[in-house]
Length: 399
Image (cartoon, rainbow, N blue to C red):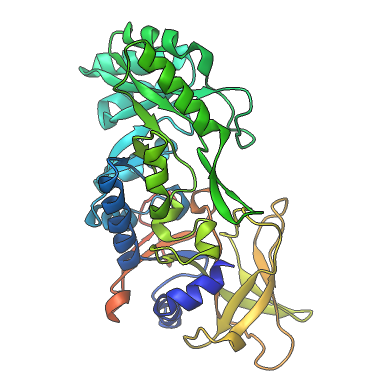
């Protein structure tokens, strides 16, 4: 699905990645980033966010927290990150992209709070309960500042991915706000949820979830108690075309991730302003039983669509031709993805050493893939800027 979009909307990227691999300049098992497209996409999102008065924080986990990605995002005008965990906070901070939001989705562990406050001083820190609120406020107090705290809320009918549940009851929001304001080092700043938007497969549109309604109702309740100047953080399936609707619903903050590299579900069914800016590159290792086995390690395919025929562009020279497409069997999540198996029947069968290009929505931070940032693709002068692991650290490659 995403491979079709890559071939049609950013063919120079595909060809540049293949050429770099043929020249031995990038490793197999690598997420490759088109930094020119990332920068342009970030600028599009920032411009639209500013138009609607939204604060904007960049999510980096999907592309392995790459430092060159953070730099491209900053060149595009986005100055803050949202850190899904402490590893994201460290990586973006070290890359110079300040932490705008910490603690959502993953809370900060007890004995990491003091260090997080002292080193990152995030603009906002999300908490799920009074204990975490106290830890955040106490850590900020020790670091000599007052922390703006967002609270994750929920109500009956809200949607959460399995394992993402948690937060305060929205019915208690006014008492929660008062409690946080009573903490030394803490200040109630607003409310958050995830996801506020989701792609609907039936309508092929992005629709608001019940969670967004929960935020709106909680904001109304807070306003009746004199708290009208609050932050409403509403992440989920964010692209530039959706920011006007978020702002209309009362949101004050957005957090694009896949939108920055053009891999939201909506990017498959509509040509949005953001270009596809990430692909996965592998190499054929060996042949067996009519299959060409290509190196794995990064085959986490985000299951946002029902099962479909995964394909790859396979060849020994740069191409986006339909004749280079091959069906691929990817091991299920229950198996270690040492290899994926490419159909090797018929004419021009793949051979060891061939390059394989995949287009899917990944989550590089949960893989053992390399992440490679490439600039200059838009001008025909591709240059490898970084080769890193999924923690945004320089990788020891080739050895």
